[in-house]
Length: 191
Ligand SMILES: *[C@@H]1O[C@H](CO)[C@@H](O)[C@H](O)[C@H]1NC(C)=O
Ligand SMILES: *[C@@H]1O[C@H](CO)[C@@H](O)[C@H](O)[C@H]1NC(C)=O
Image (cartoon, rainbow, N blue to C red; front, side):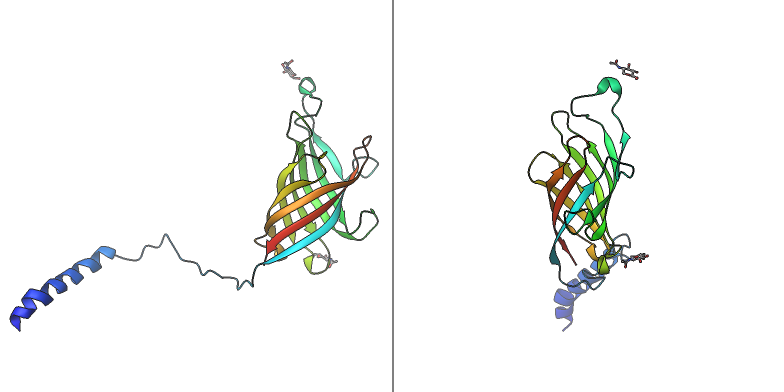
């Protein structure tokens, strides 16, 4: 019996007593988070369609030029120009159709060779249960292409954790004033 203890059990006993002190206290700089802390339901895909009205002309513009490229650096495509926008989003292409929200942010001419805008805007919805929820767009918009795709990089409210894409296509544009109506089709995954 004693022989068995010394030959087999003692080495085991020593091995176990040596491993435990090396683990030490639990480190606190890493904390595991429950996978579903907010009791999120299954992720769903939503399709939104609305019309974006960019009004530059007239007494109540919704897009104003806030940055002009330096006069001696002006290129044919106004590289460097930036407009701040607070554009209405409506249910139909007509400006007097139901207001769904606004597109707030800015766009700038980021290409020297063509019209290629950098769009940075939040869609702020104001209707029904979506009132106050937002989606954020950050992407490239070469406005003379028929369909332009831009990433949806996030959202808030009912659109928390949103990710997806928006496709923009011009409905009407006035070359003289710059006013435009653009259809947005947005697909987003959210909870
Ligand atoms: C462009 O204009 C700025 C100020 O208006 C001036 O400082 C600069 O030297 C000019 N550059 C050229 C290349 O003329
Ligand atoms: C949307 O929310 C704002 C602020 O909470 C509130 O003032 C407004 O009446 C709401 N609008 C609608 C249409 O529910």
